Image 1: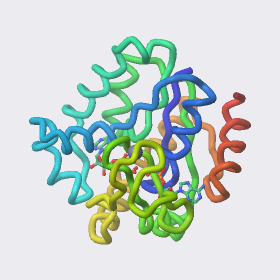
Image 2: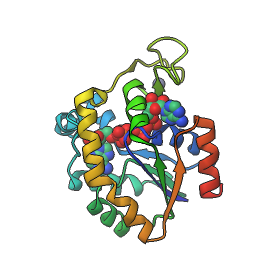
Image 3: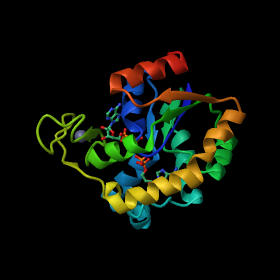
Image 4: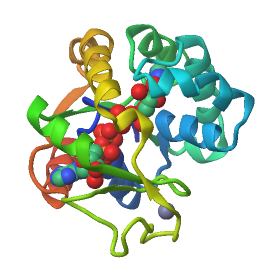
Length: 209
Ligand code: ADP
Ligand code: ADP
Ligand code: ZN
């Protein structure tokens, strides 16, 4: 099954994708995680995108589309995938339609107040990308990843100024994808407000898995 996870920053897409991987046995492809890994490795891509991401803006469509096209061509994505954080613009969605067939677009709904609460406390493992929250889901040992022992940190783009910019970018450039996919008959909504386990249930019902 080829799935897209849509929703505002902080809605819980990455958290749900990590759970859904266990259910669907398909890879979780997060453009944000790919960019952060490139930044950590100080690769040419990473050096290119770091300032843009830290400012809460979008990486340009051309670079992002090429990256996803290459990733989806890999062996493990042939049996299905969860695309998290892509597409984020109409041109990205149109490009995707040219090289892959999307089955379902899952839109994670969360009011603005909760978005700010989730982003404000988000903590991420620098090594494996697993998400935590300082109040709702802290690692067992302060600043140490339960999964891999890596360092758990606050993303630069989860600071207040960048968050405001990201929400603006979401409204202007990404939210139009909701109607875009609804018109194609591919959209299904998931209430992202309850606990992670409950959101997993909502997801299973919405997608029928
Ligand atoms: P969030 O957790 O807020 O949904 P992500 O981890 O998906 O954020 O993305 C972090 C940042 O990486 C974005 O703010 C943006 O700068 C960049 N990025 C990720 N995906 C895309 C994309 N599809 N197009 C452009 N930029 C992207
Ligand atoms: P996204 O990938 O959509 O940007 P994340 O999965 O990174 O969102 O989640 C954002 C923050 O909210 C993280 O700190 C995560 O631990 C927390 N979180 C995710 N889902 C829930 C939930 N259902 N209830 C409470 N906190 C959540
Ligand atoms: Zn880790």
